[in-house]
Length: 279
Image (tube, rainbow, N blue to C red):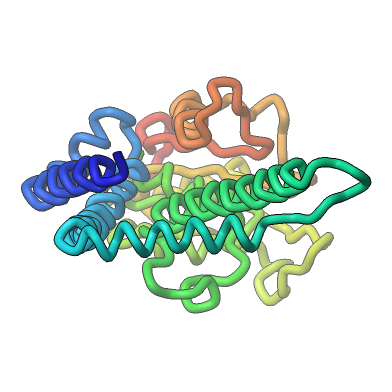
């Protein structure tokens, strides 16, 4: 029975390895994008593909070695099982049979191992999800203090705008990170004089320009292809504008896997053609 399990694992690992190396990263990205329609899903697919290309051949080699030396593998597994049972064997507790505390202890150990496996899986999925941003770099090397909302907006703009887009941003944050992650797109933002040389701190709301504060001449001088309004501060957020951009809401709901999700901040992306701007 145990040998059949290793044979099954060998076959599945071989099929996975063959599929992973037969499928190109571009094919995986295109299929993921066609299914979920988000740039994030395409980047996740590439990371998962490379993970399968590395892990599946390693599993094939491990299963083949185990089957090639099956007698030693079987004896080793039996010894591990005996050692585990001996280590988790408990004595009598308040006249209960010896097997009762032993079973309870083993159940607790099994639950702990299952919880560890779940956390490991969630951590691995998180690494894959953040791979397009971090790769092998730490958060401090990439960009410190980036919030989840910042990342969601970056992913949305990546999916919703072409690579050669010029984006004019109105926000209560300093959006220099957008230019970094959205390259080769160009992001422009007019900073308010009162916040130009102010270091952002928790609880301090920076002064900022709304889109309505910019004149048609200011906008025309930049010649943007898109206009982004992105506000998170309590002095700028307008709850009645949470649903102002249906495309953003649909993207955020797919990203979070919640059809009722509504971000508690304002994001609105519009092509410049939607604004009547006179040069």
